Amino acid sequence: MENAEAYLQKSRIHKELEYSTAFEMISSILIEWRKARPENEELKECAKALAKIGIIVAGYQMELDGVQKMVSQYRSEKLKYQQDAYASAKKLADYEEKYFKEKG
Image (cartoon, rainbow, N blue to C red):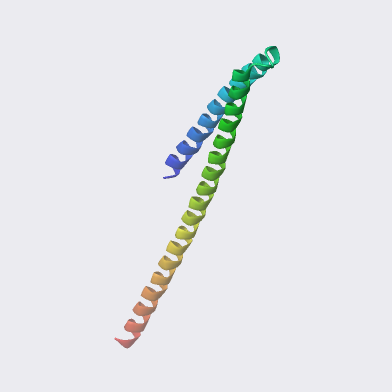
């Protein structure tokens, strides 16, 4: 399971780097075009659309981070409860063995 999580984390980082690189490249080109043609309405609309894309992706990244934190917390709690249950079952088994051994 840990290997899968590590792979997914590396994959996510790789995708974020690809996105950031592509977004930066397009932004830089668009800025240069806007400087060269400041009155071009199509370039203005492209800049607005690109900004919206950036905001949407940032929102998705924040949501994903929140979900991953929740899943991690749930997994930690589950492990703790499993360990507690195992310890309780062991104590009960030890007690039963001692109690029935003394009675028998």
